[in-house]
Amino acid sequence: MMELRNNLYFFYKETQQIKDKVDGLKEFAVNQGFNLVQNSEEANIIASIGGDGAFLQAIRKTGFRDDCLYVGVSTGQLGIYCDFHIDEQEKMLEAMQFEEIEVRRYPIISVVIDGDTEFYCLNECSIRTSTIKVITAEIYINDLHFETFKGDGIIVATPSGTSGYNKSVNGALIDPMLPCMQVSELASVNNNTFRTLGSSFVLNDDKELILKIKKGDNSYPIIGLDNEAYSIRSNEEIKITLPERRIKTVKLKNNSFWHKVQRSFL
Ligand code: NAP
Ligand code: MN
Image 1 (spheres, rainbow, N blue to C red):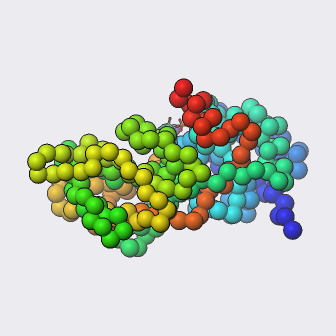
Image 2: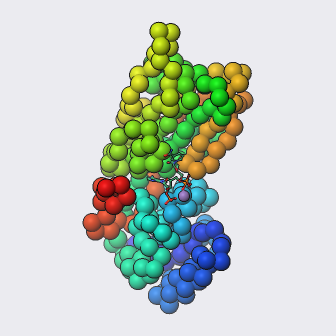
Image 3: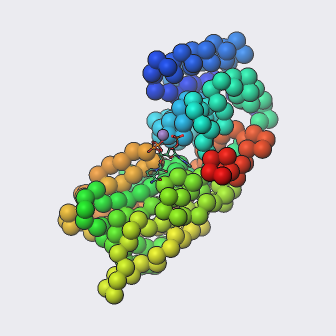
């Protein structure tokens, strides 16, 4: 039997301006038969209110669930993850209610630090120096020692993340129907002693990317996981893979990734 999808949780940063709009939306949702839940774990629909940055936070703070539907509701411009504007109440709730709703599935990446802590990213993972010194990292693709990287850092983007940070360093945009990850350089040092590929490359979902970071060179490396960052000064190995887990959102007519890209950039 199909599970009735009507337990709704709203994720947003409570400012007065947003609160007024969300209160109206909540009331409308209740009148439409939705059950507003206080805890995201009880929800089978999680609506984030804000922009793409808010959507990334909503996914992270609710644990990258693969058993619920995430809905991005924008308070400004529609981005890559926001399919609705906050004023489009009817359109939004209709889309959530429709039982055989079409679902879009976004690949994510898994990041394991020193074989221990696992994090997921919906946009990208970036490893960067936080000082004026370059970082040095040995880069492996599975067992192959691919290159020694010296430079500001490396970005590993998911397909839907390719229009974010990845795009600003001239990475290609990738259709999220392709489960893969794109690796791009941030200002690599290239001379007669150090050599890196110099262009972005895309890995299939059966590949592992391993970065072994040189310690103690005053580069104070940090890791960015979408819009959060941590120091990895005392860590050595970062392993990045593509798990089977997907993030589900609603799929509307005329709203493919390429429609969104066109809407955002052209
Ligand atoms: P932010 O610094 O406030 O915003 C960065 C911009 O990227 C915002 O306009 C944001 O849209 C947009 N954005 C986020 N995800 C996107 C995607 N998948 N495709 C296209 N645009 C996207 O940070 P934030 O809002 O928390 O977003 C975090 C993301 O910013 C990171 O994951 C990274 O992709 C991106 N970023 C980009 C650069 C760069 O281009 N130089 C540097 C750092 C981070 P909204 O305004 O709708 O939130
Ligand atoms: Mn933002």
